[in-house]
Image (cartoon, rainbow, N blue to C red; front, side):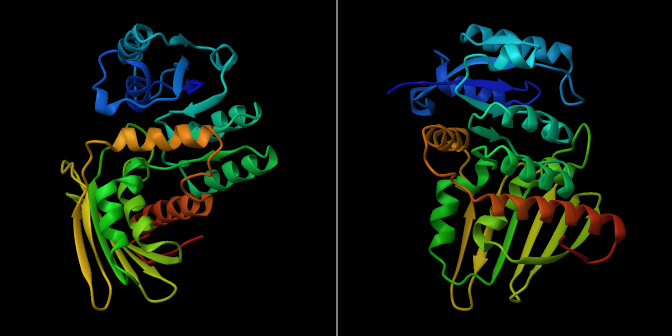
Length: 295
């Protein structure tokens, strides 16, 4: 199999290391390896999520795996056939996605899509303007045991999911880390969310999502509780799951490689936009103390 040459933009996310490890680290466990991709370069820059010391440590790791690390965008993308945008600070996503879109290469934009719904829509506009192949998703929506469980229940009426609320170094924590749990919700319920009510307390955030057709979803984000799971119910069936995270990065990277090879995006962009809308609306509901409608 021909290996696609890929450049990573951003080193403030651990995903830059996780993906490169599975692509080409000699010490990577055999059952975690992903074929068909070669990370040739990475662009580093400081953000509130990673300082120079952390970037230096990650740079040493990548260089040990044959990845050239630069501080210049043009040098980074030279010779690349596809791009991984791995920028933890989602307020920078519009800026770097526009740079990437102008190259005409396929792009994976790591979650969340953006920091606000407005900027999510701007990314949609840029993607359309440059006709760029792209997708954005969390690995959570592809967890095999979750997918198997959810797909066994037909006509789901209620979904309750839970996950951690990691604390963001900048921006909204619900957007930055809550995206994982909201991906679980959206994978189970599909589109059609109408409004959100949110409660914010010392332990985290609970969001109740109402749908146009009367269905209901609940997302519970808890500080310090790093486990994902949930339940789905129809009127006459139910199922529960705890997400098996052992192959989360591998599963996502395999889908990225397939996409770079011409396969359709594994998640529709309209799904990603609704998740961004849900995150944005949850933040507004937390701040207002009222039920807020999706934009």
